[in-house]
Image 1 (tube, rainbow, N blue to C red):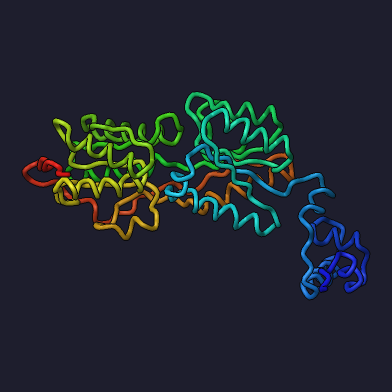
Image 2: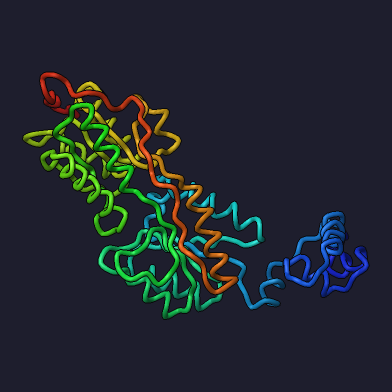
Length: 352
Protein backbone atom coordinates (compact mmCIF):
# COMPACT_ATOMS: atom_id res chain seq x y z
CA UNK A 1 0.00 0.00 0.00
CA UNK A 2 1.41 3.37 -1.04
CA UNK A 3 2.33 5.60 1.89
CA UNK A 4 1.70 9.33 1.69
CA UNK A 5 4.84 11.44 2.20
CA UNK A 6 5.28 13.02 5.62
CA UNK A 7 6.97 16.14 6.90
CA UNK A 8 9.88 13.91 7.99
CA UNK A 9 10.33 12.78 4.37
CA UNK A 10 10.49 16.40 3.22
CA UNK A 11 12.99 17.26 5.96
CA UNK A 12 15.17 14.32 4.99
CA UNK A 13 15.07 15.21 1.28
CA UNK A 14 15.87 18.89 1.95
CA UNK A 15 18.51 18.14 4.58
CA UNK A 16 16.83 20.21 7.33
CA UNK A 17 14.88 19.63 10.52
CA UNK A 18 11.12 19.04 10.65
CA UNK A 19 10.75 22.36 12.48
CA UNK A 20 12.43 24.22 9.62
CA UNK A 21 10.09 22.51 7.14
CA UNK A 22 7.10 23.59 9.23
CA UNK A 23 8.32 27.19 9.34
CA UNK A 24 8.88 27.26 5.58
CA UNK A 25 5.56 25.68 4.63
CA UNK A 26 3.65 28.02 6.96
CA UNK A 27 5.49 31.06 5.59
CA UNK A 28 6.88 31.99 9.00
CA UNK A 29 10.04 34.11 9.34
CA UNK A 30 13.47 32.72 10.17
CA UNK A 31 14.11 30.52 7.13
CA UNK A 32 16.73 31.63 4.60
CA UNK A 33 15.33 32.13 1.06
CA UNK A 34 17.51 29.42 -0.51
CA UNK A 35 16.61 26.96 2.26
CA UNK A 36 12.92 27.73 1.83
CA UNK A 37 13.19 27.23 -1.92
CA UNK A 38 14.92 23.86 -1.37
CA UNK A 39 12.16 22.77 1.06
CA UNK A 40 9.36 23.80 -1.30
CA UNK A 41 11.03 21.99 -4.18
CA UNK A 42 11.40 18.83 -2.08
CA UNK A 43 7.76 19.01 -0.97
CA UNK A 44 6.61 19.43 -4.56
CA UNK A 45 8.75 16.55 -5.80
CA UNK A 46 7.45 14.23 -3.08
CA UNK A 47 3.84 15.38 -3.53
CA UNK A 48 3.62 16.39 0.11
CA UNK A 49 0.49 18.24 1.25
CA UNK A 50 0.41 19.59 4.83
CA UNK A 51 -2.41 18.31 7.03
CA UNK A 52 -4.92 21.12 7.55
CA UNK A 53 -5.93 19.65 10.91
CA UNK A 54 -2.34 19.45 12.14
CA UNK A 55 -1.65 22.96 10.93
CA UNK A 56 -4.71 24.32 12.71
CA UNK A 57 -3.87 22.53 15.97
CA UNK A 58 -0.27 23.71 15.98
CA UNK A 59 -1.29 27.33 15.50
CA UNK A 60 -4.58 27.33 17.49
CA UNK A 61 -6.20 28.63 14.34
CA UNK A 62 -8.91 27.37 11.99
CA UNK A 63 -7.26 28.74 8.82
CA UNK A 64 -10.77 29.39 7.55
CA UNK A 65 -13.00 32.43 7.10
CA UNK A 66 -16.77 32.40 7.30
CA UNK A 67 -19.69 33.85 5.34
CA UNK A 68 -23.19 33.51 6.81
CA UNK A 69 -26.03 34.13 4.37
CA UNK A 70 -29.51 34.70 5.80
CA UNK A 71 -31.29 33.95 2.55
CA UNK A 72 -33.18 30.95 1.17
CA UNK A 73 -30.72 28.70 -0.65
CA UNK A 74 -32.70 28.83 -3.90
CA UNK A 75 -32.57 32.64 -3.92
CA UNK A 76 -28.86 32.68 -3.12
CA UNK A 77 -28.13 30.62 -6.22
CA UNK A 78 -30.12 33.03 -8.40
CA UNK A 79 -28.29 36.14 -7.19
CA UNK A 80 -25.35 36.75 -9.57
CA UNK A 81 -23.45 38.95 -7.07
CA UNK A 82 -22.50 36.30 -4.52
CA UNK A 83 -20.99 33.68 -6.86
CA UNK A 84 -18.65 36.37 -8.21
CA UNK A 85 -17.90 37.69 -4.71
CA UNK A 86 -17.17 34.18 -3.40
CA UNK A 87 -14.91 33.50 -6.40
CA UNK A 88 -12.92 36.60 -5.48
CA UNK A 89 -12.62 35.47 -1.86
CA UNK A 90 -11.54 31.97 -2.86
CA UNK A 91 -8.88 33.38 -5.20
CA UNK A 92 -7.15 35.05 -2.26
CA UNK A 93 -7.70 32.25 0.26
CA UNK A 94 -6.21 29.66 -2.09
CA UNK A 95 -2.93 31.59 -2.09
CA UNK A 96 -2.48 31.07 1.66
CA UNK A 97 -4.12 27.68 2.12
CA UNK A 98 -7.25 28.94 3.87
CA UNK A 99 -10.80 27.69 3.40
CA UNK A 100 -14.14 29.47 3.14
CA UNK A 101 -16.94 28.18 5.37
CA UNK A 102 -20.33 29.11 3.91
CA UNK A 103 -23.36 28.85 6.18
CA UNK A 104 -26.86 29.45 4.70
CA UNK A 105 -29.52 30.11 7.33
CA UNK A 106 -33.07 31.45 7.51
CA UNK A 107 -34.30 33.93 10.10
CA UNK A 108 -32.52 36.27 12.51
CA UNK A 109 -32.38 33.76 15.38
CA UNK A 110 -30.81 31.03 13.25
CA UNK A 111 -28.38 33.57 11.77
CA UNK A 112 -27.14 34.38 15.28
CA UNK A 113 -27.29 30.97 16.99
CA UNK A 114 -26.71 28.61 14.07
CA UNK A 115 -24.47 31.00 12.20
CA UNK A 116 -22.00 33.33 13.88
CA UNK A 117 -22.25 32.02 17.44
CA UNK A 118 -21.76 28.39 16.46
CA UNK A 119 -18.88 29.19 14.11
CA UNK A 120 -17.14 31.13 16.87
CA UNK A 121 -17.79 28.69 19.71
CA UNK A 122 -16.74 25.68 17.62
CA UNK A 123 -13.57 27.44 16.47
CA UNK A 124 -14.56 26.80 12.86
CA UNK A 125 -13.38 30.16 11.53
CA UNK A 126 -10.87 32.88 12.37
CA UNK A 127 -13.08 35.70 11.09
CA UNK A 128 -16.19 36.43 9.03
CA UNK A 129 -17.45 38.57 6.18
CA UNK A 130 -20.54 40.57 7.08
CA UNK A 131 -22.90 41.29 4.18
CA UNK A 132 -26.43 42.71 3.83
CA UNK A 133 -25.92 45.26 6.61
CA UNK A 134 -29.19 46.27 8.25
CA UNK A 135 -30.44 49.85 8.47
CA UNK A 136 -30.55 51.52 11.86
CA UNK A 137 -27.65 49.76 13.54
CA UNK A 138 -27.00 46.14 12.62
CA UNK A 139 -27.27 43.96 15.78
CA UNK A 140 -24.72 41.53 14.35
CA UNK A 141 -21.97 44.11 14.88
CA UNK A 142 -22.49 43.94 18.65
CA UNK A 143 -22.75 40.14 18.53
CA UNK A 144 -19.42 39.76 16.74
CA UNK A 145 -17.71 42.05 19.24
CA UNK A 146 -19.11 39.94 22.08
CA UNK A 147 -17.83 36.79 20.36
CA UNK A 148 -14.42 38.42 19.76
CA UNK A 149 -14.75 37.35 16.14
CA UNK A 150 -12.87 39.55 13.63
CA UNK A 151 -15.00 40.80 10.75
CA UNK A 152 -14.91 42.84 7.57
CA UNK A 153 -18.16 44.43 6.42
CA UNK A 154 -19.29 44.81 2.83
CA UNK A 155 -20.02 48.54 2.84
CA UNK A 156 -19.80 50.52 6.10
CA UNK A 157 -22.74 50.40 8.54
CA UNK A 158 -25.00 53.44 8.92
CA UNK A 159 -23.99 53.78 12.59
CA UNK A 160 -20.61 53.36 14.28
CA UNK A 161 -18.03 51.30 12.40
CA UNK A 162 -16.25 48.82 14.70
CA UNK A 163 -14.72 46.77 11.89
CA UNK A 164 -12.87 47.50 8.65
CA UNK A 165 -15.13 47.81 5.63
CA UNK A 166 -14.83 47.34 1.90
CA UNK A 167 -16.53 50.48 0.62
CA UNK A 168 -17.98 51.05 -2.82
CA UNK A 169 -19.52 54.30 -4.01
CA UNK A 170 -22.81 53.01 -5.42
CA UNK A 171 -24.47 56.43 -5.50
CA UNK A 172 -22.27 57.66 -8.34
CA UNK A 173 -23.54 54.90 -10.63
CA UNK A 174 -27.21 55.43 -9.76
CA UNK A 175 -26.82 59.18 -10.24
CA UNK A 176 -25.19 58.57 -13.62
CA UNK A 177 -28.14 56.36 -14.66
CA UNK A 178 -30.67 59.07 -13.76
CA UNK A 179 -28.59 61.77 -15.47
CA UNK A 180 -28.32 59.60 -18.60
CA UNK A 181 -32.07 59.11 -18.75
CA UNK A 182 -32.74 62.80 -18.13
CA UNK A 183 -30.32 63.76 -20.92
CA UNK A 184 -32.32 61.50 -23.26
CA UNK A 185 -35.42 63.53 -22.42
CA UNK A 186 -37.10 61.39 -19.74
CA UNK A 187 -38.97 63.34 -17.08
CA UNK A 188 -40.86 60.58 -15.29
CA UNK A 189 -38.21 58.16 -14.06
CA UNK A 190 -39.32 55.35 -11.74
CA UNK A 191 -37.38 53.05 -9.46
CA UNK A 192 -37.66 49.39 -8.51
CA UNK A 193 -35.91 49.27 -5.16
CA UNK A 194 -34.16 46.53 -3.26
CA UNK A 195 -35.11 45.60 0.32
CA UNK A 196 -35.16 48.80 2.36
CA UNK A 197 -33.98 47.07 5.54
CA UNK A 198 -30.56 46.67 3.89
CA UNK A 199 -28.09 49.57 3.85
CA UNK A 200 -27.26 49.04 0.16
CA UNK A 201 -30.94 48.75 -0.81
CA UNK A 202 -31.77 51.98 1.01
CA UNK A 203 -28.67 53.72 -0.36
CA UNK A 204 -29.51 52.99 -4.01
CA UNK A 205 -33.07 54.20 -3.52
CA UNK A 206 -31.90 57.40 -1.81
CA UNK A 207 -29.39 58.05 -4.61
CA UNK A 208 -32.19 57.80 -7.21
CA UNK A 209 -34.38 60.20 -5.23
CA UNK A 210 -31.55 62.70 -4.69
CA UNK A 211 -30.57 62.64 -8.37
CA UNK A 212 -34.13 63.48 -9.43
CA UNK A 213 -34.25 66.36 -6.97
CA UNK A 214 -30.86 67.74 -8.05
CA UNK A 215 -31.94 67.65 -11.70
CA UNK A 216 -35.17 69.47 -10.90
CA UNK A 217 -37.29 66.49 -11.96
CA UNK A 218 -40.53 65.53 -10.22
CA UNK A 219 -40.49 62.59 -7.79
CA UNK A 220 -40.87 59.40 -9.77
CA UNK A 221 -43.02 56.40 -8.93
CA UNK A 222 -41.33 53.60 -7.01
CA UNK A 223 -42.08 50.01 -6.11
CA UNK A 224 -40.31 47.78 -3.61
CA UNK A 225 -38.61 44.64 -4.89
CA UNK A 226 -36.45 42.09 -3.12
CA UNK A 227 -33.47 41.71 -5.49
CA UNK A 228 -35.09 38.58 -7.00
CA UNK A 229 -36.46 38.15 -10.53
CA UNK A 230 -39.96 37.44 -9.18
CA UNK A 231 -39.86 40.52 -6.98
CA UNK A 232 -38.63 42.66 -9.87
CA UNK A 233 -41.36 41.36 -12.17
CA UNK A 234 -44.12 42.07 -9.65
CA UNK A 235 -42.78 45.57 -8.94
CA UNK A 236 -42.57 46.33 -12.68
CA UNK A 237 -46.21 45.35 -13.19
CA UNK A 238 -47.25 47.67 -10.37
CA UNK A 239 -45.40 50.61 -11.91
CA UNK A 240 -46.57 50.04 -15.48
CA UNK A 241 -50.20 49.56 -14.45
CA UNK A 242 -50.26 52.73 -12.38
CA UNK A 243 -52.28 55.79 -13.36
CA UNK A 244 -49.20 57.63 -14.63
CA UNK A 245 -46.55 55.04 -15.59
CA UNK A 246 -42.91 56.06 -15.97
CA UNK A 247 -41.14 56.30 -19.31
CA UNK A 248 -37.96 54.93 -17.71
CA UNK A 249 -37.19 52.71 -14.71
CA UNK A 250 -33.96 52.54 -12.69
CA UNK A 251 -33.61 49.10 -11.08
CA UNK A 252 -31.57 48.33 -7.95
CA UNK A 253 -30.00 45.25 -9.56
CA UNK A 254 -29.70 43.49 -12.92
CA UNK A 255 -31.80 40.48 -11.96
CA UNK A 256 -34.88 42.64 -11.34
CA UNK A 257 -34.16 44.73 -14.45
CA UNK A 258 -33.97 41.68 -16.71
CA UNK A 259 -37.26 40.43 -15.25
CA UNK A 260 -38.66 43.92 -15.93
CA UNK A 261 -37.70 43.67 -19.60
CA UNK A 262 -39.60 40.38 -19.84
CA UNK A 263 -42.69 41.89 -18.18
CA UNK A 264 -42.59 44.89 -20.51
CA UNK A 265 -42.49 42.58 -23.53
CA UNK A 266 -45.41 40.59 -22.13
CA UNK A 267 -47.39 43.83 -21.83
CA UNK A 268 -46.75 44.70 -25.45
CA UNK A 269 -44.15 47.40 -24.76
CA UNK A 270 -40.96 47.74 -26.77
CA UNK A 271 -37.62 48.29 -25.03
CA UNK A 272 -36.38 51.01 -25.39
CA UNK A 273 -38.94 52.62 -27.73
CA UNK A 274 -41.77 52.57 -25.16
CA UNK A 275 -39.79 52.12 -21.96
CA UNK A 276 -36.13 52.62 -21.01
CA UNK A 277 -34.59 50.36 -18.36
CA UNK A 278 -31.32 50.47 -16.41
CA UNK A 279 -29.89 47.87 -14.04
CA UNK A 280 -27.16 47.65 -11.41
CA UNK A 281 -24.30 45.09 -11.16
CA UNK A 282 -23.28 44.65 -14.81
CA UNK A 283 -23.59 40.88 -14.59
CA UNK A 284 -22.51 38.65 -17.47
CA UNK A 285 -26.14 38.12 -18.53
CA UNK A 286 -26.76 41.88 -18.83
CA UNK A 287 -24.96 42.10 -22.17
CA UNK A 288 -26.74 39.06 -23.62
CA UNK A 289 -30.42 39.88 -23.00
CA UNK A 290 -32.54 41.56 -25.68
CA UNK A 291 -31.90 44.40 -25.84
CA UNK A 292 -28.55 44.45 -24.00
CA UNK A 293 -29.00 46.13 -20.64
CA UNK A 294 -27.73 49.59 -19.76
CA UNK A 295 -26.44 49.07 -16.24
CA UNK A 296 -24.14 50.24 -13.48
CA UNK A 297 -20.86 48.33 -13.35
CA UNK A 298 -19.52 47.07 -10.05
CA UNK A 299 -16.66 44.62 -9.59
CA UNK A 300 -18.04 41.85 -7.35
CA UNK A 301 -14.97 39.68 -7.96
CA UNK A 302 -12.70 42.55 -6.94
CA UNK A 303 -14.82 43.21 -3.86
CA UNK A 304 -14.38 39.58 -2.81
CA UNK A 305 -10.62 39.75 -3.27
CA UNK A 306 -10.33 43.03 -1.35
CA UNK A 307 -12.52 41.74 1.48
CA UNK A 308 -10.46 38.55 1.77
CA UNK A 309 -7.15 40.43 1.88
CA UNK A 310 -8.48 42.81 4.54
CA UNK A 311 -9.87 40.02 6.73
CA UNK A 312 -6.69 37.95 6.44
CA UNK A 313 -4.68 40.97 7.55
CA UNK A 314 -7.08 41.64 10.43
CA UNK A 315 -6.73 38.04 11.62
CA UNK A 316 -2.94 37.97 11.22
CA UNK A 317 -2.03 41.45 12.45
CA UNK A 318 -4.96 42.39 14.69
CA UNK A 319 -5.82 45.46 12.61
CA UNK A 320 -6.61 46.37 9.04
CA UNK A 321 -7.61 49.50 7.17
CA UNK A 322 -10.89 49.87 5.35
CA UNK A 323 -10.61 49.51 1.57
CA UNK A 324 -12.21 51.90 -0.89
CA UNK A 325 -12.90 50.39 -4.30
CA UNK A 326 -13.17 52.40 -7.54
CA UNK A 327 -16.62 54.02 -7.81
CA UNK A 328 -19.38 52.43 -9.84
CA UNK A 329 -19.92 53.69 -13.37
CA UNK A 330 -22.65 53.50 -15.98
CA UNK A 331 -22.32 51.16 -18.95
CA UNK A 332 -24.65 52.33 -21.73
CA UNK A 333 -26.13 49.65 -23.96
CA UNK A 334 -29.36 49.44 -25.94
CA UNK A 335 -32.08 49.28 -23.28
CA UNK A 336 -32.26 53.10 -23.06
CA UNK A 337 -33.35 55.70 -25.65
CA UNK A 338 -35.29 58.94 -25.88
CA UNK A 339 -38.95 58.66 -24.82
CA UNK A 340 -41.63 58.19 -27.46
CA UNK A 341 -42.95 61.55 -28.81
CA UNK A 342 -46.53 60.71 -27.87
CA UNK A 343 -45.72 59.85 -24.26
CA UNK A 344 -45.88 56.51 -22.52
CA UNK A 345 -48.00 53.99 -24.41
CA UNK A 346 -50.37 52.17 -22.03
CA UNK A 347 -49.57 48.49 -21.64
CA UNK A 348 -51.98 45.99 -23.08
CA UNK A 349 -54.04 43.73 -20.87
CA UNK A 350 -52.25 40.51 -19.98
CA UNK A 351 -53.85 37.22 -20.97
CA UNK A 352 -53.43 33.98 -19.12
